[in-house]
Amino acid sequence: MNKNYDENNIFAKILRLEIPCHKILENDHALAFSDINPQSVIHVLVIPKKAYLNLYDFTENASISEIELLWKLVNDVIKLNKISEKGFRIISNSGDDGNQDVPHFHVHLLGGKNLGRMIN
Ligand code: 5GP
Image (cartoon, rainbow, N blue to C red; front, side):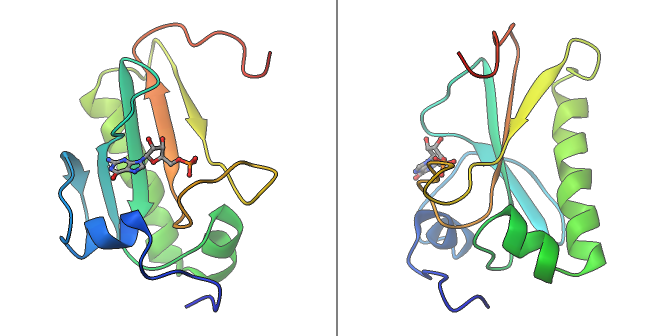
């Protein structure tokens, strides 16, 4: 585990079932659940079940099967919501410059409407 990982972050608590979430899907290595403060019609968070700080930490240190199953779960949520044709947006905030609030790697999947330009 990365020495900077805070085991008391909110997503770690969700993974330990200490606080509830609205689960969408899961597999052996990843969990998808609704964002508590949705920024679009569809706003799902997809997280690895093991402790990684951010996308860089995940891609540097996770196993191939963890990486494969996280992105497979993103695709499964896209399929479940039938947004593969209409489109969607993936965001992963990292660190201070990325304005990451929760220090457990997560992918935001946003969709269900036109999301406008990425950065205004
Ligand atoms: P970040 O800024 O780290 O990329 O995004 C963190 C996201 O986690 C935010 O969109 C926020 O709404 C969401 N979030 C924060 N606390 C909770 C929580 O307790 N439950 C859920 N489902 N989402 C949360």
